[in-house]
Image (cartoon, rainbow, N blue to C red; front, side):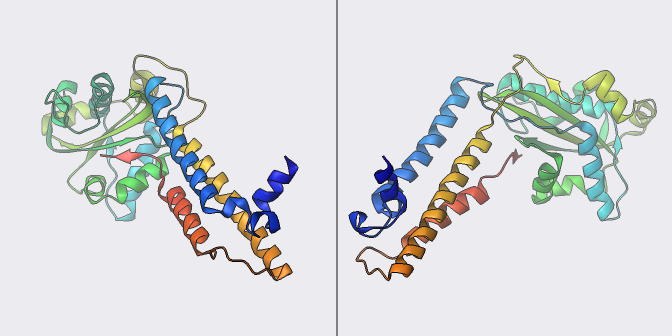
Length: 286
């Protein structure tokens, strides 16, 4: 066993002076393992909801603060929190969980504005932002701000009020956190209702909670699929880097001449893994 590991990592005559891990066949095995891992994670998420999934520490207050921070940077007035708008946002998130969809319009044809009406909020202009699978508020706001349409909602000078829903549940077989922002400017009649609305923190504790759990309740996931993917990719990347360093050091030290390919292919392989790690990002927006 010791000799086999030596062949894997150290160039020598028995492996044609090239560590076995740098041979094309072994690199192919590594790629296959990574792809198989991705397939297994996806299958397990579908077959066993709640075992794998995303959990977050996003709260209504954090989303409100971060949203108004973006407006403040542009000299815009902060959006006022409105409890009815938050009720509308929560209703929308719950509807996505209950009917298993991820879109602004439901399969039954319900639009975002139907949830405004259901909550009893009357507006002159309105908008909606959606997000899922994010762990923290900062990353979620960054994704929204990098999207022209979502950014337009956040920094729209026509909007005066905001409602926020942060809801946990199972969507497409995977436990996740949905975040819904409802933006609006109220009608004059609606403005009178807003004067008696509770503060964001009161609403979280008394009405909506910082997050809402929709049925079926599931325990908090211990592992999430994105974390597993990144761990495996990092391990693979690290192993190949170490082997390349050992290979280069021993080859230069011994002045070994060999007929195997150059390191260009291995560097290309490393770049593929690095790109996977960089672009495997948390969360999605709509």
